[in-house]
Length: 366
Image (cartoon, rainbow, N blue to C red; front, side, top):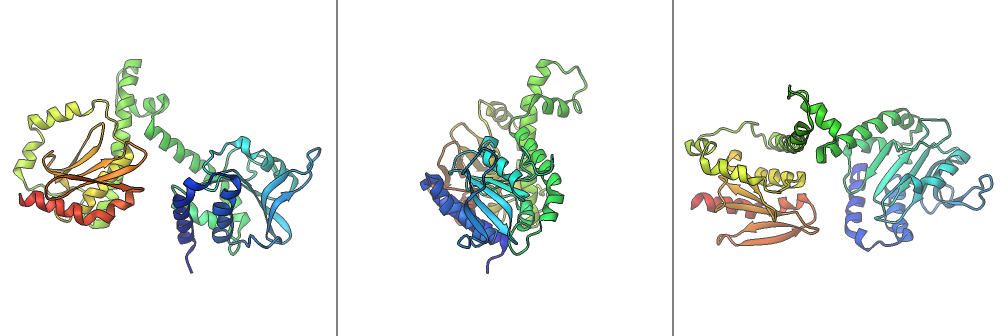
């Protein structure tokens, strides 16, 4: 039997395969949400004593309103679920029925979902009144593994409402902080720029300085994340964080005029993304079994992101074509002709490890 985390991963894979053909709310329920209730939370969707579809409870002057699903335990409604079609975005306005039903039942947990993103609400701010912000957000397209133990507390076999309610406030604030950090790493706000810059810049923080440091903070943030990814890959491979440099030629190249001039010209409207940097670190991790990691470099251009041996354009290892809806991995044969392979996720780069290593070997033998 699959473990809890494995079941989540399996459903996430199904969502990736089928999301493009799901066009209605009913299709979303059948393909994504009912499997989530049954395989992830463990409730029998065909047993009305556990899962009540189209749950109805008259509220004041509102008659006949229905919530998509109510999950029942020991004869009491514990969880309410409101569904929207995939891939529609979720807004708090979509939770208006949840908000009303929450106050009219004994439910302490409300879920707003489009089958891909699940927003979990409770009543931290006022008793029996649904909060305006979720305490937990599960994105099936980008699963945060730290949330899996908390989600498991809502499953049928290990239902622990008291535990999840007691940790809900911490989960909410940690989630909001993480999302704020992620947003600032992508596009730093003026306050974030000032906060980081005042620690390294001692002069008056004028508008000109703010404008200058906005770009520097964005670039430093991307490099920091890239370094963190690289450190984790090296740790997994048993590589030292500071690779040994034995080539005098490579040491000299650090201050060579062509390299410096190329660096100065590199930032010509080119935006290096975190996804490109992560792809680079994956390629480098693959080939560093055959070559020192410090010999694998990258150059970003407007049309593609190149991974090179010895920072030499004549020694391409791979090209990442990520600036488009369909991503491609460019690989090279002995004739140095590029072949573009469509990929859906960065993990697929590992499937082409053999050809990447063969490319490096051919460059080193030349």
